[in-house]
Amino acid sequence: MDIGIRPTARGGVRAAATLALGLALAGCGFHLRGEVHLAAELERVHVQSADPFGPLKRDLEAALARAGAKVEPAPGDGVAEVSLAAVSLAPIVRSVGANAFVNEFSMVYHVELEITDGAGKTLLPKQVIEQSRVYTFDQTQAIGTGAEQDEIKKEMERDMVQAVLRKIEAVGRRS
Image (cartoon, rainbow, N blue to C red; front, side, top):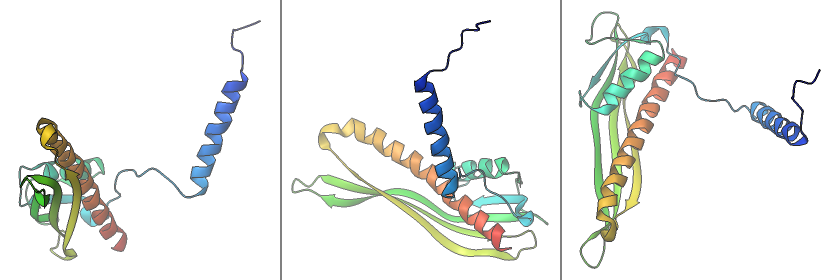
């Protein structure tokens, strides 16, 4: 009985290559970064932010919820607090050409982070997390520059959420 499935040499080579790649990655210790693992004292958490309606607070709360935390709308007894005391994302001029036009910007994302547990004990004293990206400004492509700037901001917001989550996870490993 012929069911119409015939192995090909190409398929076998592809499968072998995929298997070899998987084994090589596993052997070197590589693994995909999953959601953050929270310590027990961070399972109920409130996120306090200097920018209460900004994307960092919203995205961080969503990531914490995906990690299994119960995100509380207000601080209280038994509720840990992730405080984002200062949040700013702004372009800074890096260079100006001979024609007095800006040639290069640096987008700087600045966050001051502090974490306390539900009893008010400081788990992470105030720390600054700062990221920056450099981009050039082309006067002939002024319309595209705005879109590029927006894309850089979105990328930096995603990166900042991951940076804060790594700090939260590190606090959980220490406690």
